[in-house]
Length: 351
Image (tube, rainbow, N blue to C red):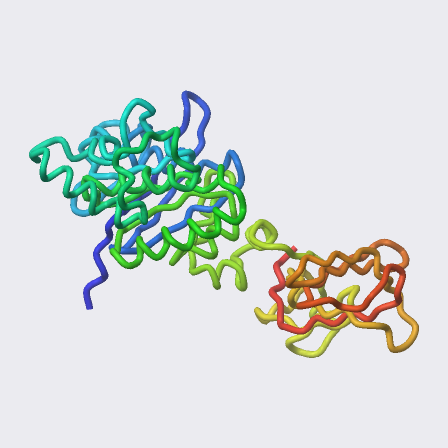
């Protein structure tokens, strides 16, 4: 069976700024129609990777292939951005303030098209992003969410091979951000548009992407589905970066097979670890309940968020702390003695 073709292939890519290396030996491939999120903290190199794909930054080593065309190879080959068939959606739209919406969207359609063709294509794109009839508006008349929709329409106008989204929702308020994420994801999937989303927002990456690339320190730390990244992180560092968690010493030698002894008691473990290490436990895998007998743990924080209550319990010596996400309003008060149970098998990492 032949492997699926790649819409984007990156092999051994390294890049930096002068003598300051930023990306180190990046290798990944994206299949046609896939939405890939590049997730990482500030300074990890994710925007440099996006700029390298777009042709806005020269690589020093490796190669970038878009479809069947190699657009960058080491320091010797660098195809100009306008020849790469890439659409870019920047963080805050970056619309042309002196142009109407129609002129902005149609900017990339000028070559080889008539005015009537551009007008028809522009109206189709405005319909696509949910803004029909906005062609005569100016950017200053649009909300932040509308500006990002126009930026997406502009990026889609030349029918790019890949759309690159650089923190596209970061400047929006929480409610609008959630709505626009859902709409953009639906549009990209419905049209099978190959896309790369760069973000530091874990909810955004996990909620939008088909696969997630976690970048730490200029390297790819893990590539996988959102479920794989969250539930089976490749390293302790990935697990601690993605999602909320506690890390606690665990020793499988002091418990039955499939279990490990911890400060929380015996807990079930996932990966068949046999040597002492560190267990990574998510708050939703912890159940904090009123103590049945004497307990070494007390409730030290209760936060009601609406859909859930976040409860923190701390050991009396202050050495161990556990956090639980519980649906609804759980009736526990500060100082209450509690029992702590780990309700699902968790990974244990060496060291």
